[in-house]
Length: 248
Length: 77
Picture 1 (cartoon, chains in turn orange, purple):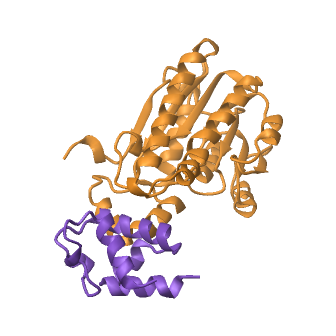
Picture 2: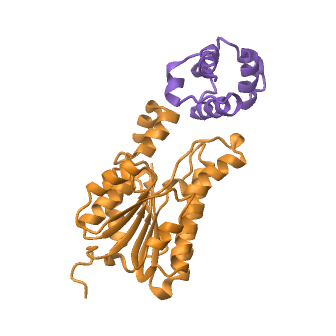
Picture 3: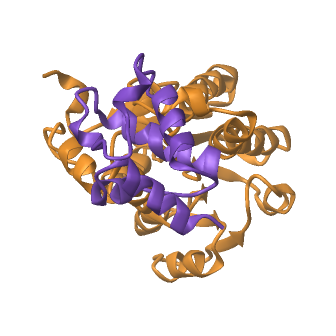
Protein backbone atom coordinates (compact mmCIF):
# COMPACT_ATOMS: atom_id res chain seq x y z
CA UNK A 1 0.00 0.00 0.00
CA UNK A 2 1.27 3.43 -0.96
CA UNK A 3 2.03 5.24 2.29
CA UNK A 4 2.03 8.65 0.61
CA UNK A 5 -0.91 8.55 -1.80
CA UNK A 6 -0.85 12.33 -2.38
CA UNK A 7 2.77 12.36 -3.52
CA UNK A 8 3.87 12.62 -7.15
CA UNK A 9 7.36 11.36 -6.36
CA UNK A 10 9.05 10.03 -9.51
CA UNK A 11 5.98 10.44 -11.73
CA UNK A 12 6.71 11.73 -15.22
CA UNK A 13 4.12 14.32 -16.21
CA UNK A 14 3.48 16.38 -19.35
CA UNK A 15 1.96 19.82 -18.77
CA UNK A 16 0.85 21.99 -21.72
CA UNK A 17 0.30 25.73 -21.49
CA UNK A 18 2.91 25.96 -18.75
CA UNK A 19 4.29 29.35 -19.76
CA UNK A 20 1.68 31.23 -17.73
CA UNK A 21 -1.36 31.13 -15.49
CA UNK A 22 -2.77 27.83 -14.24
CA UNK A 23 -0.30 25.78 -16.32
CA UNK A 24 2.73 27.52 -14.82
CA UNK A 25 1.46 27.19 -11.25
CA UNK A 26 0.50 23.54 -11.81
CA UNK A 27 4.06 22.82 -12.97
CA UNK A 28 5.52 24.48 -9.88
CA UNK A 29 3.16 22.69 -7.46
CA UNK A 30 3.60 19.31 -9.18
CA UNK A 31 7.40 19.66 -8.99
CA UNK A 32 7.13 20.45 -5.28
CA UNK A 33 5.28 17.14 -4.91
CA UNK A 34 8.13 15.27 -6.60
CA UNK A 35 7.04 15.06 -10.24
CA UNK A 36 9.49 15.11 -13.17
CA UNK A 37 8.05 17.37 -15.81
CA UNK A 38 7.89 18.00 -19.52
CA UNK A 39 6.42 21.49 -19.88
CA UNK A 40 5.27 23.12 -23.11
CA UNK A 41 4.22 26.63 -24.07
CA UNK A 42 4.35 29.08 -26.93
CA UNK A 43 6.44 31.72 -25.21
CA UNK A 44 10.08 30.70 -24.77
CA UNK A 45 10.97 33.30 -22.14
CA UNK A 46 7.91 32.65 -20.00
CA UNK A 47 8.48 28.90 -20.28
CA UNK A 48 12.06 29.34 -19.11
CA UNK A 49 10.78 31.51 -16.27
CA UNK A 50 8.51 28.63 -15.17
CA UNK A 51 11.46 26.21 -15.44
CA UNK A 52 13.56 28.29 -13.06
CA UNK A 53 10.78 28.05 -10.46
CA UNK A 54 10.53 24.26 -10.54
CA UNK A 55 11.78 22.10 -7.69
CA UNK A 56 13.93 19.03 -8.30
CA UNK A 57 15.86 18.07 -11.43
CA UNK A 58 15.35 16.44 -14.80
CA UNK A 59 12.61 18.74 -16.09
CA UNK A 60 12.37 19.46 -19.83
CA UNK A 61 10.86 22.43 -21.69
CA UNK A 62 9.50 22.34 -25.22
CA UNK A 63 8.59 25.58 -26.93
CA UNK A 64 5.76 24.66 -29.30
CA UNK A 65 2.41 25.77 -30.65
CA UNK A 66 0.14 22.75 -30.12
CA UNK A 67 -1.97 23.81 -33.12
CA UNK A 68 1.07 23.74 -35.40
CA UNK A 69 3.50 21.00 -34.48
CA UNK A 70 3.17 18.15 -32.00
CA UNK A 71 5.42 15.60 -33.75
CA UNK A 72 8.61 16.50 -31.87
CA UNK A 73 6.70 16.70 -28.59
CA UNK A 74 5.20 13.23 -29.10
CA UNK A 75 8.66 11.83 -29.95
CA UNK A 76 10.16 13.28 -26.80
CA UNK A 77 7.48 11.90 -24.50
CA UNK A 78 7.83 8.39 -23.14
CA UNK A 79 6.50 6.54 -20.14
CA UNK A 80 4.13 9.30 -19.03
CA UNK A 81 2.36 8.89 -15.70
CA UNK A 82 0.28 11.99 -16.21
CA UNK A 83 -0.88 14.53 -18.80
CA UNK A 84 -2.28 17.95 -17.89
CA UNK A 85 -3.71 20.14 -20.63
CA UNK A 86 -3.83 23.78 -19.64
CA UNK A 87 -3.32 25.39 -23.06
CA UNK A 88 -6.39 27.35 -24.09
CA UNK A 89 -7.91 30.68 -25.03
CA UNK A 90 -11.17 32.42 -24.19
CA UNK A 91 -13.28 34.63 -26.42
CA UNK A 92 -16.41 36.73 -26.07
CA UNK A 93 -18.35 36.69 -29.34
CA UNK A 94 -22.12 37.15 -29.67
CA UNK A 95 -23.81 34.43 -31.75
CA UNK A 96 -24.62 36.76 -34.66
CA UNK A 97 -20.89 37.47 -35.13
CA UNK A 98 -19.69 33.86 -35.23
CA UNK A 99 -17.99 32.83 -38.46
CA UNK A 100 -15.88 29.89 -39.64
CA UNK A 101 -12.67 31.70 -38.72
CA UNK A 102 -13.72 32.34 -35.12
CA UNK A 103 -14.99 28.76 -34.72
CA UNK A 104 -11.61 27.47 -35.91
CA UNK A 105 -9.69 29.86 -33.66
CA UNK A 106 -11.54 28.81 -30.51
CA UNK A 107 -11.90 25.08 -31.28
CA UNK A 108 -8.36 24.52 -32.59
CA UNK A 109 -6.61 25.27 -29.33
CA UNK A 110 -9.39 24.39 -26.88
CA UNK A 111 -10.51 21.12 -28.49
CA UNK A 112 -8.67 19.89 -31.58
CA UNK A 113 -5.13 20.35 -30.23
CA UNK A 114 -5.57 18.47 -26.91
CA UNK A 115 -7.63 15.74 -28.60
CA UNK A 116 -4.93 15.09 -31.22
CA UNK A 117 -2.14 15.32 -28.66
CA UNK A 118 -3.70 12.74 -26.34
CA UNK A 119 -4.82 10.56 -29.25
CA UNK A 120 -1.24 10.38 -30.53
CA UNK A 121 0.30 9.83 -27.09
CA UNK A 122 -2.07 6.92 -26.48
CA UNK A 123 -1.74 5.50 -29.98
CA UNK A 124 2.06 5.56 -29.80
CA UNK A 125 2.00 3.95 -26.35
CA UNK A 126 3.65 6.87 -24.60
CA UNK A 127 1.31 6.64 -21.60
CA UNK A 128 1.88 4.20 -18.74
CA UNK A 129 -0.81 1.96 -17.28
CA UNK A 130 -2.34 3.68 -14.28
CA UNK A 131 -1.62 7.16 -15.66
CA UNK A 132 -3.89 10.13 -14.96
CA UNK A 133 -5.06 12.68 -17.52
CA UNK A 134 -6.34 16.07 -16.35
CA UNK A 135 -7.98 18.45 -18.80
CA UNK A 136 -8.57 22.06 -17.81
CA UNK A 137 -12.15 22.67 -18.88
CA UNK A 138 -14.40 25.44 -17.63
CA UNK A 139 -17.48 26.05 -15.57
CA UNK A 140 -18.78 27.54 -18.84
CA UNK A 141 -19.27 24.04 -20.25
CA UNK A 142 -22.26 23.58 -17.94
CA UNK A 143 -22.97 27.23 -17.09
CA UNK A 144 -22.48 29.30 -20.27
CA UNK A 145 -22.19 33.07 -20.49
CA UNK A 146 -23.34 35.66 -23.03
CA UNK A 147 -20.85 35.75 -25.89
CA UNK A 148 -19.43 32.38 -24.84
CA UNK A 149 -21.11 30.02 -27.34
CA UNK A 150 -17.85 28.91 -28.95
CA UNK A 151 -15.79 28.72 -25.76
CA UNK A 152 -18.41 26.86 -23.72
CA UNK A 153 -19.07 24.56 -26.68
CA UNK A 154 -15.41 23.64 -27.06
CA UNK A 155 -15.14 23.00 -23.31
CA UNK A 156 -18.31 20.85 -23.30
CA UNK A 157 -16.72 18.84 -26.11
CA UNK A 158 -13.56 18.39 -24.03
CA UNK A 159 -15.63 17.20 -21.04
CA UNK A 160 -17.05 14.41 -23.14
CA UNK A 161 -13.70 13.58 -24.72
CA UNK A 162 -12.38 13.12 -21.18
CA UNK A 163 -15.27 10.85 -20.20
CA UNK A 164 -14.68 8.76 -23.31
CA UNK A 165 -10.99 8.33 -22.43
CA UNK A 166 -12.12 7.13 -18.99
CA UNK A 167 -14.39 4.53 -20.62
CA UNK A 168 -12.01 3.33 -23.34
CA UNK A 169 -8.85 3.13 -21.22
CA UNK A 170 -10.19 1.73 -17.96
CA UNK A 171 -8.63 -1.69 -18.73
CA UNK A 172 -5.21 0.01 -18.50
CA UNK A 173 -6.38 1.86 -15.38
CA UNK A 174 -5.71 5.14 -17.18
CA UNK A 175 -7.96 7.77 -15.64
CA UNK A 176 -9.22 11.05 -17.12
CA UNK A 177 -10.98 13.95 -15.46
CA UNK A 178 -11.75 17.60 -16.17
CA UNK A 179 -11.56 20.58 -13.86
CA UNK A 180 -14.44 22.93 -14.60
CA UNK A 181 -13.44 26.11 -12.91
CA UNK A 182 -15.06 29.49 -12.67
CA UNK A 183 -13.03 32.69 -12.74
CA UNK A 184 -9.41 32.33 -11.68
CA UNK A 185 -6.95 35.23 -11.53
CA UNK A 186 -4.75 34.59 -14.61
CA UNK A 187 -3.59 36.45 -17.72
CA UNK A 188 -6.64 34.87 -19.44
CA UNK A 189 -8.89 36.70 -16.98
CA UNK A 190 -7.02 39.93 -17.67
CA UNK A 191 -7.85 39.42 -21.35
CA UNK A 192 -11.53 38.82 -20.60
CA UNK A 193 -11.52 41.88 -18.38
CA UNK A 194 -10.18 43.97 -21.28
CA UNK A 195 -13.21 42.86 -23.31
CA UNK A 196 -15.97 43.28 -20.77
CA UNK A 197 -14.37 46.01 -18.56
CA UNK A 198 -13.02 45.95 -15.02
CA UNK A 199 -16.29 47.28 -13.58
CA UNK A 200 -18.25 44.35 -15.06
CA UNK A 201 -15.65 41.87 -13.78
CA UNK A 202 -15.68 43.34 -10.26
CA UNK A 203 -19.49 43.12 -10.22
CA UNK A 204 -19.24 39.49 -11.40
CA UNK A 205 -16.84 38.59 -8.59
CA UNK A 206 -19.46 39.62 -6.03
CA UNK A 207 -21.64 36.71 -7.20
CA UNK A 208 -18.92 34.24 -6.08
CA UNK A 209 -19.44 33.38 -2.38
CA UNK A 210 -15.67 32.80 -2.01
CA UNK A 211 -14.63 35.33 -4.68
CA UNK A 212 -12.52 34.42 -7.72
CA UNK A 213 -10.01 31.58 -7.45
CA UNK A 214 -6.22 31.62 -7.45
CA UNK A 215 -4.00 29.49 -9.69
CA UNK A 216 -2.80 27.55 -6.63
CA UNK A 217 -6.39 26.45 -5.94
CA UNK A 218 -6.52 24.73 -9.33
CA UNK A 219 -2.95 23.43 -9.14
CA UNK A 220 -3.71 21.66 -5.85
CA UNK A 221 -6.71 19.91 -7.42
CA UNK A 222 -4.62 18.90 -10.44
CA UNK A 223 -2.02 17.37 -8.09
CA UNK A 224 -4.74 15.40 -6.31
CA UNK A 225 -6.08 14.09 -9.63
CA UNK A 226 -2.57 13.14 -10.78
CA UNK A 227 -1.81 11.34 -7.54
CA UNK A 228 -2.74 7.81 -6.51
CA UNK A 229 -5.02 9.32 -3.86
CA UNK A 230 -7.61 9.77 -6.61
CA UNK A 231 -7.28 6.24 -8.04
CA UNK A 232 -11.07 5.69 -7.96
CA UNK A 233 -11.87 9.07 -9.59
CA UNK A 234 -12.33 8.95 -13.36
CA UNK A 235 -14.66 10.31 -16.03
CA UNK A 236 -15.84 13.11 -13.83
CA UNK A 237 -16.11 16.88 -14.15
CA UNK A 238 -14.90 18.61 -11.03
CA UNK A 239 -16.56 21.95 -10.48
CA UNK A 240 -14.46 24.57 -8.72
CA UNK A 241 -16.31 27.86 -8.56
CA UNK A 242 -16.08 29.26 -5.05
CA UNK A 243 -19.73 28.37 -4.54
CA UNK A 244 -21.09 30.30 -7.55
CA UNK A 245 -23.45 27.54 -8.74
CA UNK A 246 -24.36 26.21 -5.29
CA UNK A 247 -27.47 28.33 -5.30
CA UNK A 248 -28.63 31.86 -4.64
CA UNK B 1 -17.45 55.88 -43.66
CA UNK B 2 -20.02 58.13 -42.09
CA UNK B 3 -21.77 58.06 -38.78
CA UNK B 4 -25.16 57.25 -40.29
CA UNK B 5 -23.83 53.93 -41.49
CA UNK B 6 -22.61 53.16 -37.95
CA UNK B 7 -25.98 54.13 -36.50
CA UNK B 8 -27.78 51.91 -39.01
CA UNK B 9 -25.50 48.97 -38.17
CA UNK B 10 -25.89 49.45 -34.43
CA UNK B 11 -29.68 49.71 -34.62
CA UNK B 12 -29.79 46.55 -36.71
CA UNK B 13 -27.53 44.56 -34.37
CA UNK B 14 -29.39 45.84 -31.30
CA UNK B 15 -32.61 44.62 -33.02
CA UNK B 16 -34.34 47.97 -32.49
CA UNK B 17 -37.77 48.10 -34.12
CA UNK B 18 -37.43 51.87 -34.36
CA UNK B 19 -33.90 52.74 -35.59
CA UNK B 20 -34.58 56.47 -35.17
CA UNK B 21 -34.19 56.17 -31.41
CA UNK B 22 -30.45 55.95 -32.05
CA UNK B 23 -28.72 59.20 -33.05
CA UNK B 24 -25.21 60.62 -32.81
CA UNK B 25 -26.00 62.14 -29.42
CA UNK B 26 -27.64 59.04 -27.95
CA UNK B 27 -25.93 57.92 -24.74
CA UNK B 28 -25.53 54.14 -24.78
CA UNK B 29 -26.02 53.64 -21.08
CA UNK B 30 -29.06 55.92 -21.21
CA UNK B 31 -30.89 53.41 -23.41
CA UNK B 32 -33.51 51.54 -21.41
CA UNK B 33 -32.49 48.30 -23.15
CA UNK B 34 -28.78 48.72 -22.30
CA UNK B 35 -27.06 45.59 -20.94
CA UNK B 36 -23.68 43.86 -20.96
CA UNK B 37 -24.83 42.10 -24.13
CA UNK B 38 -24.94 45.42 -25.98
CA UNK B 39 -21.32 46.08 -25.02
CA UNK B 40 -20.32 42.70 -26.47
CA UNK B 41 -22.28 43.48 -29.65
CA UNK B 42 -20.56 46.86 -30.09
CA UNK B 43 -17.10 45.30 -29.61
CA UNK B 44 -17.85 42.50 -32.10
CA UNK B 45 -19.51 44.84 -34.62
CA UNK B 46 -16.68 47.35 -34.60
CA UNK B 47 -14.18 44.53 -35.07
CA UNK B 48 -16.04 42.77 -37.89
CA UNK B 49 -17.32 45.80 -39.80
CA UNK B 50 -14.49 48.30 -39.32
CA UNK B 51 -11.53 46.04 -38.44
CA UNK B 52 -10.92 48.12 -35.32
CA UNK B 53 -10.32 46.67 -31.85
CA UNK B 54 -12.08 48.35 -28.94
CA UNK B 55 -12.39 47.04 -25.38
CA UNK B 56 -14.93 47.11 -22.59
CA UNK B 57 -12.70 49.62 -20.84
CA UNK B 58 -12.89 51.86 -23.94
CA UNK B 59 -16.67 51.69 -23.75
CA UNK B 60 -16.59 52.69 -20.09
CA UNK B 61 -14.72 55.86 -21.10
CA UNK B 62 -17.23 56.99 -23.72
CA UNK B 63 -20.86 57.98 -23.64
CA UNK B 64 -22.44 58.61 -27.03
CA UNK B 65 -22.61 57.10 -30.50
CA UNK B 66 -20.52 60.08 -31.70
CA UNK B 67 -17.80 59.16 -29.16
CA UNK B 68 -17.75 55.61 -30.52
CA UNK B 69 -17.53 56.91 -34.08
CA UNK B 70 -14.58 59.12 -33.12
CA UNK B 71 -12.71 56.15 -31.62
CA UNK B 72 -13.26 54.09 -34.75
CA UNK B 73 -12.01 56.90 -37.00
CA UNK B 74 -8.95 57.50 -34.84
CA UNK B 75 -8.00 53.80 -34.88
CA UNK B 76 -8.91 52.97 -38.45
CA UNK B 77 -5.79 52.01 -40.39
